[in-house]
Length: 276
Image (cartoon, rainbow, N blue to C red):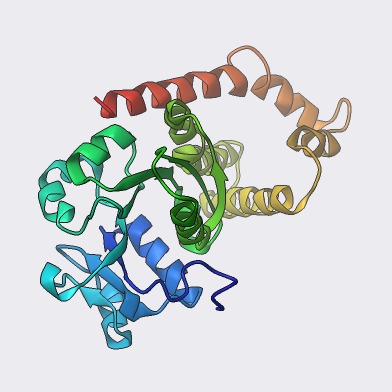
């Protein structure tokens, strides 16, 4: 990693990760894999896992005293939203007026984070494929965030996948419903496709393998292809064939489109409720 290639190189001050569960832990692993020095990172986590603890030999600081940490370049809020209220007073001690505070908490608006912690706030919504470096994150910055801080945030988030920036925070509830919650919809599809295969007579274990590998392979094809998803679907569908018969059901009244519209609307509504 060179100074010119990555804004995380030689920050000169600490990155503090508050919360090292699945998403926070995935981000930490991504930073370390990109060459960020473990000694420049501090983790605040009441119950650090063995995976977190093993990085202490590389210089990672786990639950350090504030006085031992020095200047903080960025505080990353990866705690559960329902725990943030209790954690905020402690976390505020890491924040100066110009500190970058980046939240990946669902439903927590920039204004509420700024009131609780201070600093210059970026709100981001990653998703669980971040754990394998294939996540997608959408981020929005408060007006006082500098271009340099936005570059730091972008580099921190890109350690786990691609990043999309928006200007309207009001879109974050829909983002949460589509990409934040979206992996669960795909996993549900795998579950139900396996059940449907078993109902059609396949041994359950075989049906499960076929469903998992079909969805994983199709996702990878979609990832690698420049074609629109509708074109890829059409390429599988012969007129009057078996796929066409199934799609008549899935694309008919009460099929995927109205169901997903209702599902995304419900998740969007819940995200807005969490912000209150």
